[in-house]
Length: 174
Length: 100
Image 1 (cartoon, rainbow over the protein chains, first blue to last red):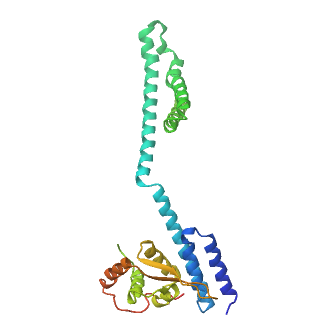
Image 2: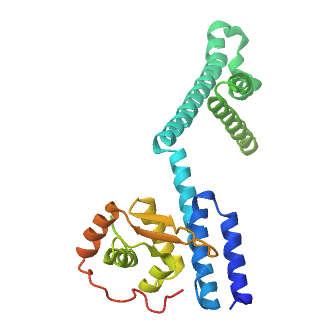
Image 3: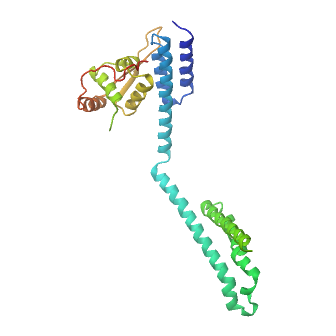
């Protein structure tokens, strides 16, 4: 009774069982054994196709379940909280640094050394808005990179955003 | 837990003779379900400890086959879902022309 279709069915299901994850291999072997008891070759081939689909779905379900158990909801929430916290800290730090840089050069210099008239000099704006903050951002990000990677990445992102904004502003307004 | 019509039909087959071990192919024949429908049902029932499976003690010259029957928890589950739904009596294949 063994002909090409049955051989094909056996080869197909055998290959699927061999390459399936261990969680579904036992089930695959069971289906393979049952196939040998099916009287007609076409029915055996249809059984093999159905079994392949069943093994594939079961393997996917197991993989998804394992993935979910590895990354439980608590763990996911903790990770998201860590990222959001780190980025918030980075943005707060950057805004603070930027504010201090602008104020220190324009207001503080006018208060401490009024005869210099720093606020009127055009390059002071560039230094206070871009040069000083960017330098501080890069140094702090480099220092924090090993221990606080998320905060460091947040600071670098702020640095890139500030530089981009500055370039766009200058190119638009001259 | 909601169960499908096919699952209810499989449970009904096992419930007809609760202590009898059954082959997958025989269940497929009795329910009219294809292997691609039947086995996911058996797998889910086994994962939930409602179905137990064993390998047939090998007869020399023939490869062993997988056998299935409901666990005590599976029997209670089946009675609750099959009998309560009013489909306790055998009604033939659930899906016509679905033999494998």
